[in-house]
Image (tube, rainbow, N blue to C red; front, side):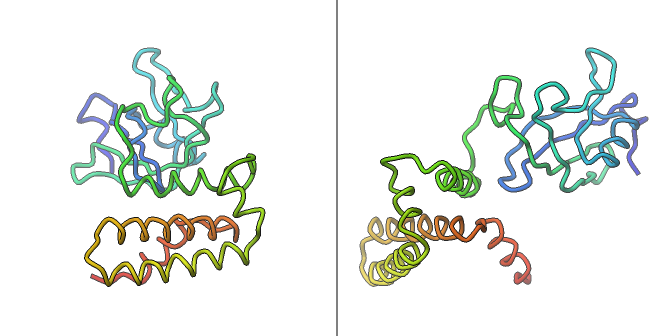
Length: 196
């Protein structure tokens, strides 16, 4: 049970992107806003400056859709993993915190970028060229990159090996996008297979 009395009726709520795990923002919730968040699956805070409830995105349209809710060990802080409809910060940035995305989080960003290329197909883009050539060409490219990675692994050239690994990852994400899938779908399978 959350202890709202400990901090004068408000509990900090950390919002994290459910895929990249990037921290998006920090807000405060009272019992009512927490209940509304659970019921509507849209993050709702209590505004300390306006002394009223507010649902993130109610004016901008950039809602935060709840995926999972966690409570810390002292029952006085909430962590919400959410899907953002757009920028979280009022400055138009993904996060209210100014830091670079983690290396692992970049894979989710890359997936979104490649999906956008698949939808928009801008002229002059190598990724667009792959999508226009079709699934057979993309699959062939993934196979070629896999073979090049195996060959590079037999040398002592770390730079070549890592570049070939990057090529394989990139083309795999393109193939996933072409099949309507995401790198996160692969991660879910890996998580399901994992045993301590």
